Image 1: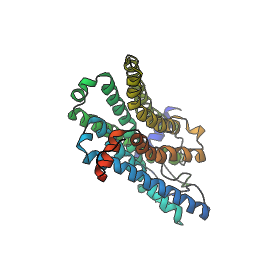
Image 2 (image 1 turned 180 degrees about the vertical axis):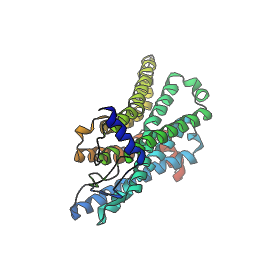
Image 3 (image 1 turned 90 degrees about the vertical axis):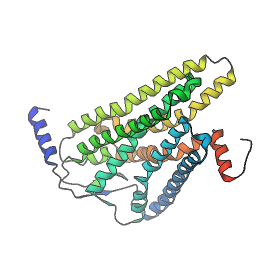
Image 4 (image 1 turned 120 degrees about the vertical axis):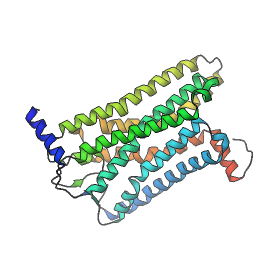
Amino acid sequence: MDSLTVSTMWMVLGQNQSWVSEFILIGFSNDPTTNNILFIVFLLIYLSTVLGNGLIIMLVCLDTQLHTPMYFFLCTLSLLDMSYITTTMPQMLVHLLAHSQIISFTGCWLQMFVFSALGITECTFFVVMAYDRYVAICYPLRYTVILNWGLCIQLTAGSWVCGLFSSLLHTFFTMSLPYCGPNRVNHYFCEGPSVRSLACMDTHLIEMVDFVLSVFVVVIPISLIVASYIGIAKAILKIKSTEGRCKAFSTCASHLTVVTFFYAPATYIYMRPDSSYSPERDKQISLFYNAFTALLNPVVYSLRNKDIKRAFFKVMGYGRMDY
């Protein structure tokens, strides 16, 4: 790409030129019967996700024994998941029953920004949770000293700042492209790659910007998580008893499961070239890390967690029980 082409691209970006005032989200199907079935399925998924994550937030807030760094981070993750799925799912449910699937240009811009901000915040927040497990296993006697409340709040706030700033860049570069038609987005929400494919100019430069952002918000967090678990594995191997090793590993299993379910599809969507863009496949993959991961989080974290179970029975008034 020569310098003249790059200059022209940036001139268009600076003018924020756009001829499209709204987009049409194609969704999954045009068949009314299929849409009715999908509506019921996705409504159940959405309600289960909100109730499951909301329950975790309520239990952590009400039970003083859960006022520890680990559960503070779990509470924050549940809040992120509730917000994350709410950014896309209610609108998709409306579009499944409505005759119109139109979203305004401003609405698309806002949805892309909020969705990306929450997703990137969750990406960086998984690093914080990995660090929490690292400190808990490698330095158990100093756990609450190292992860004091001041540091917990700073790490959480840092994740949010990273998410908001990165999302602002991603959304600005994507939505500043000229869109002169067509305006049919082959997706169920305004996700960056899907919208960008409709631009009326070469998007190679924007793809490079997105790739650099992806390195910072995907590759670096994954590397830090892997480094944390290498340290955790070394500490676990030093534990002499098999029971102690199993107990230490079980405290990390939930986090590893959720990280895998979230990062694998997100990495595919945002770190592959637009030339390999496949609308139908991308919709399915996006649905997995947007909806199903948020649904699985409370299940994964609560089924094997005795503290969560104890808090639940306590709040329900069942008193002491064997878990």
